Length: 190
Ligand code: HEC
Image 1: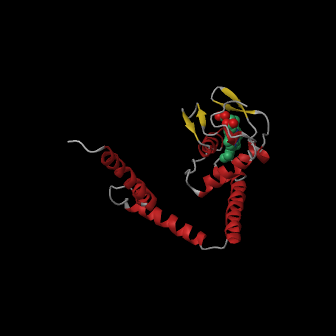
Image 2: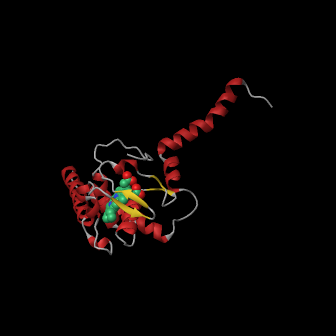
Image 3: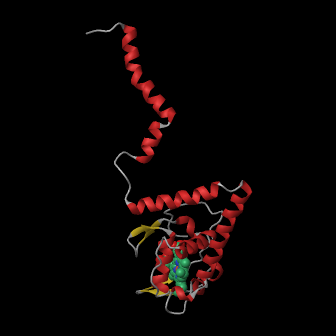
């Protein structure tokens, strides 16, 4: 069966136009966002609801309040992070991060790691290289993982849960020591 030329091109065009219209109306978008395979697990739903609630609360604020809110949250996290950095209770041997990295710098010298002596680095600029491969972990690790390495190896402490407030605050403080440094994940050496 053959169509006159004009009719055939209209037939070919129709699905394209229909898809475009659906996308413009937002149907394609919302279908993509929600997926098609049923409801999320209850725990996921709880997380979604909590995030939506926080966002709605934020959106209800006037713009200047929003800025102040974010600034305040970040400042509080930074302050808690700096306190944690100096807190020997992260470990069990009386050391804190600041024992070896005072003020985010280095106390110089080295520490024994197995049969090797490992120089104590300054933390200024180091966050910009994470995630990166660390031999001891045999993995590409995040900055929060690296902070945990030092807690375990040098403070004889339990690693922090990386989604805990304390781990996040500590990571934020350590990351702040790399303000303005070119972000270069994976960069090895100094
Ligand atoms: C006893 C000394 C000591 C203490 C205490 C210590 N560190 Fe370290 N830190 C080191 C040494 C040595 C290295 C180098 C180890 C390596 O590269 O694997 C290091 C490396 C790091 C690095 C990665 C630097 C890089 O370029 O890869 C970060 C980040 C870091 N420490 C954060 C911390 C934090 C946060 C704490 C406190 C929880 C802490 N350190 C406590 C000695 C210490």
